[in-house]
Image (tube, rainbow, N blue to C red; front, side):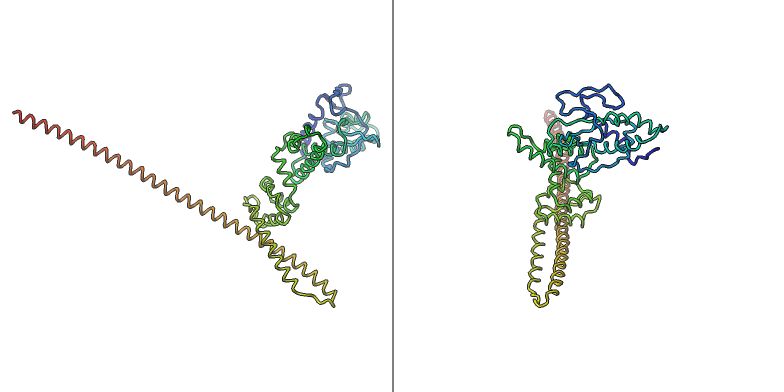
Length: 409
């Protein structure tokens, strides 16, 4: 019996090993096949180790992350065993343990239990032998778990669930922005309940909890990005644009963000850099769009319907409203086009100015070169003149000496 993995098992294995480094600090090896080699949990640990029957472990309603790649996880567990324990909270009212992290591993283990524990006799397959070695002890003795001893209130549990998942899951900008913003809200609430001297910087706390995966500046950008309207966020992701360049627009109103989203959809070419309009340009264009739409509505209101024809009124009103929406959409298109034209003109002006500066610079370079050339020529002429003058002086001196000799005769 074999299952073909759809994902790279090495990648999932590395993910498990990275997570194990955090969970197993100070505990030694927790491989279920190595009985009697476990290290006791220090009293200072925020968690305590315990083996728990899978029947008493339940998923948390606070965990909304998807559970995927179960078959791949089954293959990893068969091959390597449970490398690190599940993180759980004890719910005394129901006498159950609620998962904080490890849903995928738990579901994979449950599937393996169901598949292999009901087999009569012994199967001579590689998978069955691996199951007996690495998984069956968990069925008999219980699954390795770390029971949380710290805060188990909803906010604390939810925060730990987010931190764990965002630390190990593949990057997803929309999800990460949403979860970082939720984490910020949780920490802000917790901060308010702390004495002033114990309060912390929320953004720094998030960056620290995510083990340096994101800087404080990136945390702020993701929070700003999450505050944008869904339409704009989806456009940015679908067009492969940078979150850093779009997060600065979080101060725009809904209408202004909608116009920016339309502008990007209309003019952005994937793989090419699109110069975005400034916040002031967007606001000016939204004002123009609103004024144009209001003028259209005022013109429509001048026509008074016949009160005797109620059914006709309703149809005409609905039709007019639809038409107004279409007109407003058309205005948005025109506004985006006008924004693009203004931006193109601005870019052309900048380019023309740059060309003029470049031309002037080249002229100055030529003038300076000519000046240097003229200076060199003047220096050369002066040197020649001095040499000729020296020759003349020498000739004159010789002539004077000859005259003196002649007079002596």
